[in-house]
Length: 463
View 1 (tube, rainbow, N blue to C red):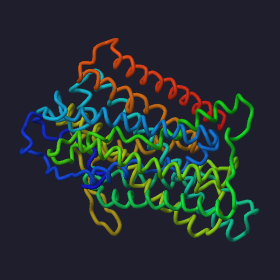
View 2 (cartoon, rainbow, N blue to C red):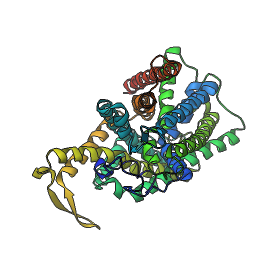
View 3 (cartoon, rainbow, N blue to C red):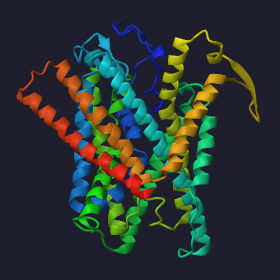
View 4 (spheres, rainbow, N blue to C red):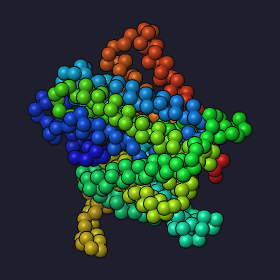
């Protein structure tokens, strides 16, 4: 089972007897410290890394790395709290195992907050799909621009509309979305993971090469100079972009569910988390800081499509191809849980209704006859068209990335882990620990609310 495959098992496919002994598993648990670390690193490294130089440019040499350090610490602390939520009521030997994030919320905090958690998760998935559609279209356009600049010179007017590429990506996702379930995505998932590491490494390498070519570091302590009113909005947008790059907490319990029962899963996943967060944070610091050092105030919003780099054009093209291929797979990884949830809900409510069970034969060139469920075809196609339509209305990389992160970061990465820790450990109100936890949650809420407003303001202005 791949890194991106195992987190999203349908609830109907998960073992329903949560009080069963460990020897009665719904799948063999053979994970170790190093497999869990690999899972986390693969999940974390993604499209968010492309905006880090721009984010550091808005914040400057002091605040930029400081904000990145802050989000790394918040992400690790969140994973530390969540690690103990896998087994309930005792984090080491509790008989009740929670296989998903939402199950943990339901077991510890109750049905109502589990419903809210599910709603936020699925809305977050929609936001991520929109962000991925925008990012992929920008990369496809960048490939065409790169070839144009190489052929005609860097001063040539190589401007192309993103709309055709948005539509191409949407049509491709309509086809891919007909893959029946997440378990059929293993090959696509492996390719996507390799692509994400490839383009991130290329971005870092180009940044280092540019600094060496310049012979000096650009940038300043306060970041880009601009009027105070504009500066505040840009800084808050940058905070949202950085927030998009770090969190993996929503997937932590699913990753923990792959680990061997001995040593205790919570101890293993805590070690994996600190290794993975330290590794990815170091990589992110290098990408963000070298990108800013290479371009200073001219750092592009997307390091591989903003054309700070023109040559070698073939490497730029390859990196953007990697982004597109990665996002083709990653889009499906994030969509499939939502597809499964909606289809299971309709089937459970109207399981004998013909419209939800009707299948038709579809002849596909080079594949042959393929049976397609009519409801699946219509619902999934409508979803992809809707996400593509929103992306066409708001095709702005940094603002969409910031909004997608800010809207879900606090509830999923801070609020629920803190609330579950308080409930599971019976932390008394108004004790020092309770006050510190609530203060931590409140400060994160304020920061992410401000970032959400700034991203919305950026979208309005960009229109």
